[in-house]
Amino acid sequence: MNNPFMVRAIQLSVENVHSSNGGPFGAVIVRDGKIIAENVNRVTSTNDPTAHAEVLAIRQACTKLGVFELLDCELYTSCEPCPMCLGAIYWAHISHIYFANTAEDAAEIGFDDSFIYSELKLPHAQRRIPTRQMMREEALAAFRAWQEKPDQIAYLRCRFANCMSISISATTA
Image 1 (spheres, rainbow, N blue to C red):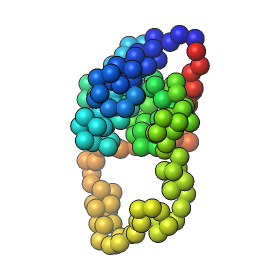
Image 2 (image 1 turned 30 degrees about the vertical axis):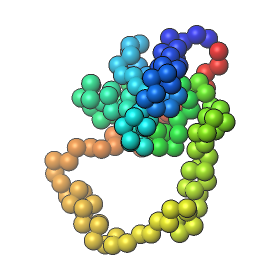
Image 3 (image 1 turned 120 degrees about the horizontal axis):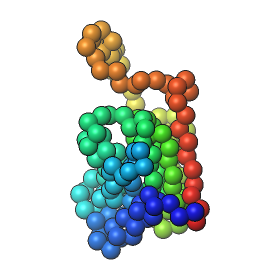
Image 4 (image 1 turned 120 degrees about the vertical axis):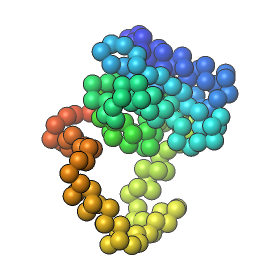
């Protein structure tokens, strides 16, 4: 199967290697059959560890559309999303994810995210970066203020299990 949106994501990833802007990753966001955003990994060129292709494409699409949820959009990415990107994809409520290279393919060239998944399963104190909770009662003041705010903008329209399904597909061609 030769999908033009995946072709573009892969093309972006190859071009990014040659431009030396970052790693070999490209992402395209599509709505109603049209590309509305595309980006590449820019971690090393921007000194920003969050500047992954998927995150930058999500930011670009949200800005272009003037929304913070991409409910009717699809993501085409040259590689299976890392844990950070997957979190951003879920928060953006993207309807479908298509990827080309697998996480295992990425690990073979030095982009191994498997340790992050392992870390998330550990108790906070046992992680490589020890994480400790503190001052919860004081911090709950912000949550109470949010709950009481009459003009709050609904942040989550729904819970995934209750109103929409996200599907992830590997593309083979």
